[in-house]
Image (cartoon, rainbow over all chains, first blue to last red; front, side, top):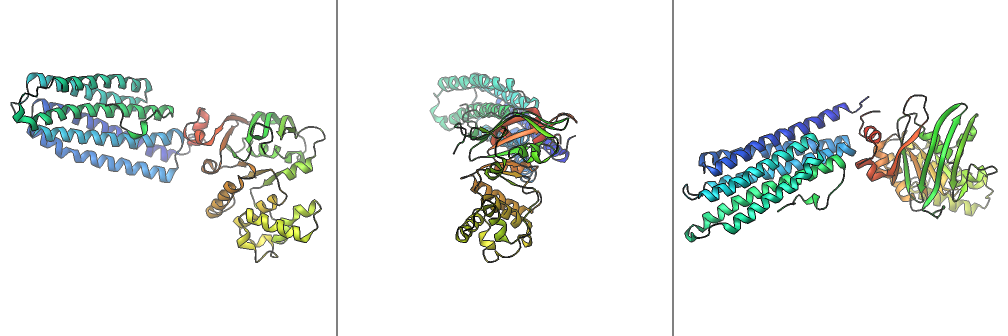
Length: 223
Length: 262
């Protein structure tokens, strides 16, 4: 007989809300990718305005998590899940901020600036970042540790692309230094998004197995 | 004083216990670390109290009860033939669920044990009473009313008086059988603080229905369970309290402490 049904229902609801936040976030990253590829300023404004949604999500999820900890004294897998849910929400919120940063950069890049090479290189990174976040949310949803462990290797590929991009980036046009920096930053922001996915995977591992991997607490893995 | 030379004050080895034909506990093995608090948790009827009562042979008083296995205290099997049960009860004291002060003065409650073993020197008795009441964190509240009846105190104070009464005979191990289930939350907190303080000198075992209490006060936790009605109580999992409450190994432990069954 389950005796803490109310509590577990509330926890399930918090979990479901985190998944909704993740799903909305995934859509936002994909839109951010398109926004950059097409240098779509209108879409950039929408993305910037849309960031509020994620702030609301995190406020609500953190409040819910704190309330459950304060009132229900959760232990074992329940405690780990609440901790991980609150961490996930933070990662999601930071990824949303990175999307906003990318959108802001887009507004300052002239329409004719992006060569086909730059566009393709960043698009490749962005696509991979989207896939990483998608996978990380999936492994949270399915409590799948094996899947979480694969994220690291996927992220290594993004890091490599980022370094390659930086090496080969055409710095010839000195007069556009500010724009050039913005473009480099966009590449870097997508790379950071992928890092967050790796951290999420580590949190999932903690949630399922209860083991803490080194450096997990800071949430600054990868790079 | 880590009695068995391995950091364990007491060790239960393959203990099986019967009430008549009924097997109440089966094959219990458990170590109680010296100067640590070990909590026994589990649903009602799982044998926690029965087990803790084996540790000072309180069950001897129940007709038809019988045990197999060993309980080692400082290297000696307390279940062995000819073991001095009176001295055992002095070395292994017990605090019960309901505070049970004698219908005597506060002073006489605490002095009862020492007098029983022949102490007559009033000066020494005064010292022991004061010292025990201080160790039980009750002295300041009762030092001016030592002649008043122990039963006139509040429930929480009565429970601390009972702890002082146990301390007065200088035990080595203190057993607590649901010590806070009949008292209010503030008194509960006082008893818990007191236990943390007593840990410097005593090995303690606490049976509690309050899992959060086990999580707060104990160093080690054993989870006991009766798998199906009519079966004996067994240890499901025993470990470091921190691990038990963050990442228990056994699914049954997890289900119990998270309230997925009760």
